Image 1 (cartoon, one colour):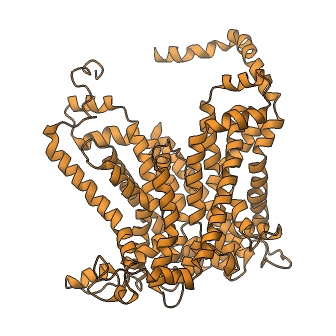
Image 2: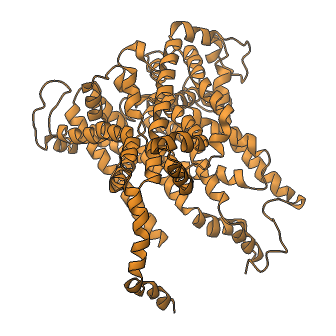
Length: 290
Length: 317
């Protein structure tokens, strides 16, 4: 029925006509109202971080600082060791991201292009890790990591976080769509299996690599609980532990807290703004969440 | 007639089988001859799985029957830990609080992310590119920082919300010292933070609904709500299921956000289950007891997942 009557009303939903003006205004204002609700908390927070410590608590509050200052930032940087936490977090996030991509790409490719009974078992095991996440094994996972000597080291934070079902299946889904003929052709040309994977297949997966890189970087940059358990020495702390320790103090030093918090957000926001399209437009798989 | 069509393929295998297996046989053997390369490819994940998943699961189960403290011997105590858990008011309080929190936050995340996604694909809204970035920014913010942001807005003596309330002639509200109000802040913060990602999932799903359905509905004179209720919702059901399942599991494991908003307080009123496990296991060094609590949490998560899966399957059929 719909098919028969289709020609007279072409692309009705795609382009709203000018007669829909009231509806356009209505929908757009709802959207912008919501956007204001979602954007305001962050904006208020960032603007507050530029207020002098004295003005933070004096009523009446103003949206913009009466006098702009960066003293909260300099204080956070000098007193609170933000630089060290920054470096630690960066090491963790970069190392974990690189390892995650290598491990996930290889495993995802194996799951997509080979048929073995043990690969099916392996796929089921990987899937189980999403259903039964690390939080449910916290105490014993800690004992294992301590017993292999990774307690209180950044590698203890990185290594257990490398395995991800999301990443593995993202790559699997992608490589399934790559024609097998390509693989066959490489075999006929005498290319070894690993060589085919590294030289031909991996470069094809560039968009997936970038998407997973951003997502994985975000996971590790924002991780709190696992680093908190593994890291004991304040010199090893990551940003999230550091910020949480300011919040946990008896008297919260809001000036430092605001500065440190905003500083800790900068790298992710910068990465996001540069690589936006890989997060927003990628055919993000439903399993993409850690 | 439908039955006869269905029955037909079943009768074929008797005659068609040899040909089929013959054609399948070759590629299968070809694939099977490769085992070293795939094994090498999965090796990293395989080792990590055995070391950081299977092994902790096995020893965790063992520890849950001991009074292990993290060092020294692990004396066997049988089911003592589990019995103690049953009578531990702190455990039940944390579990109850977690369930209340999840029951509040999941519907909110669902509505917020579907609503924003709907606006993002609507042909009537203007300025979608910028709005999408605004909606998505909270995804970049860690639970700790998100908690700090909302704590700052809802501060009792200095927060913006109380400032506005007093300006309007109201009385400052005890956002921090009242346990329920404090939980509401966590719920608001969690909704704000988790909308972004689920919105992306819904955008992808909404874009995949065939426009022909809406065109047909337009011709039949359906209104917007009818179209949403009868076409959109059924069409995006698989995504809705994923969003609900992942949000539920995620909320059951919430920790960082609560720490930043109120540290599980006032007192221990807003301790959620993961915080309970963390405190028992790592502050009080009761690894055995905490392992038992972990397995109870795991059991609850599995039950939730299975129930939702079954409900989804029934709805689908």
